[in-house]
Length: 75
Picture 1 (tube, one colour):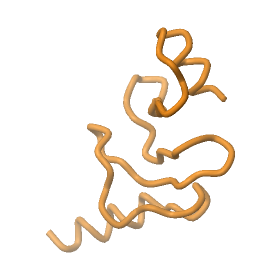
Picture 2 (cartoon, rainbow, N blue to C red; picture 1 turned 120 degrees about the vertical axis):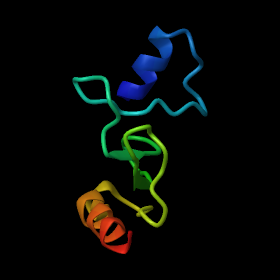
Picture 3 (tube, rainbow, N blue to C red; picture 1 turned 180 degrees about the horizontal axis):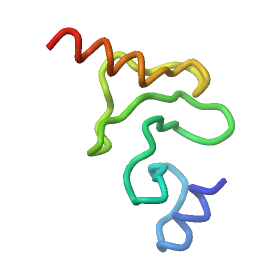
Picture 4 (cartoon, helix red, strand yellow; picture 1 turned 60 degrees about the vertical axis):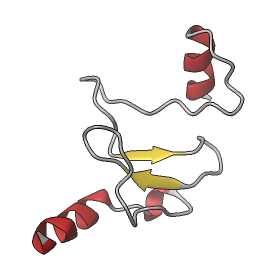
């Protein structure tokens, strides 16, 4: 529901618009979700782009730290 309030305050129709979750410093939260009730979630990088292979049916199933460590080992 917070995304709906943000969209409304920005003058954007909330239906079909996903507002990204941000931290207090203005950066993206590492886990983003489709909505706040029932959603698919995924990890994003510092620029807000989805990290490949991180989508899961719930935020509790997304582990951005493990995915990032695995990617760093491969490089």
